[in-house]
Image (cartoon, rainbow, N blue to C red; front, top):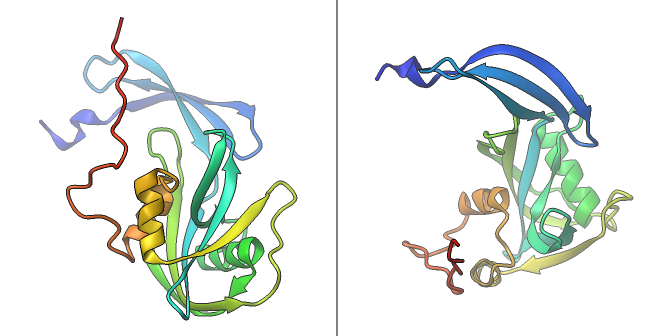
Length: 197
């Protein structure tokens, strides 16, 4: 199979409804083999950042907050959007300071991942900062309610095993710094399968 045999051809693009965090784009695409046309949704947004922040005593600065998509509290590393005119390092420093009050330290870039290439057009940049210290009281956005936790590696592993920490971008960033699980990874709670009717 040729390298381009899976490439879809864009027939047309049109703007969809405006959403708070995304610009909706509806692309009509031609199937690479049958040439049949399908409409595909793309959510355009700015790049994101995820920050693995480690204190001088080797605790990781984590945040707990309510996530509307899953209607539950989650524990995860600091994360946020890269604002217009910012680079990912500036965004990472700003988000860490706003959400937790921690700052300074030694910063290193950990690379990036595609946030969700099925529907999103952006990247999530991972940053490591070591030896962070409290700089100011946290100042989250008006739409955020955040609890800060300083967690040891064993506590992070426990949160992963219990299912409290399963944000894929957070896990991606953390896994670039710490050995999070033995391989093959086996969940503590078995998956429940519903029989199809």
